[in-house]
Image (cartoon, rainbow, N blue to C red; front, side, top):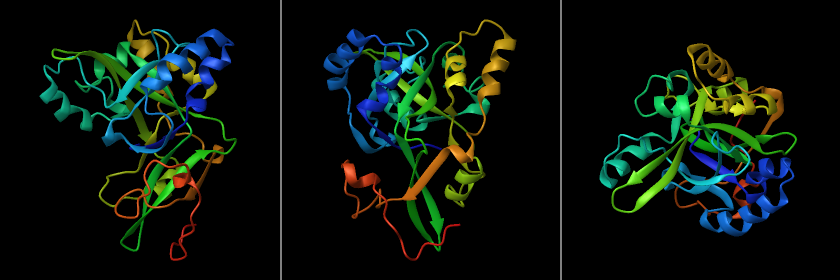
Length: 254
């Protein structure tokens, strides 16, 4: 699963800057960035933050989107609010089957650039938050699904879901919630697979090509450390030091 993230404007601009369109980068910073909740030092998906995503419609220029995909069949705002807490994540193995995701899986895939994400580790009946990020400190590129939903009362808006897959060895150790059937992790893309993720689908063989991307990210490219509490009275909120390393003397993690 992936419910807690760190997202900076710098990370979200990484793809736009790659193409060297500095006029576009300036437009993003001046027009789009103020419409988002950036910078996000920590936010839960259940708060439905607004971020930038790069869609298959325009892979070079992002759009502002709300975390928590609202499917096309949702009829009103009341139904929307009941739905989007359940669509923060989309299991990669079933995105072409589930009613909430299958249309987006076929026609509306996206990329979400983040600095890192947080997961909770269970040890001696307590939970300890970990921050996970790339060893080279480059942005993590997540696979996503998106949709533009027309709110009958307030106009249309764009929303997204983060695709997940089976946990690698590292995330299996960290994300050990005993209530889960099996540990999960967000679908992290490489430079090669992020372009393939946005490729259009016109037949079943191309669906299989997308499905082949849905696999765990290598352990040796990720780093991690424990951080301050992300829940409860000790939670500091969306502040820069929330992702700083904190050592819990009682925690044994090997």
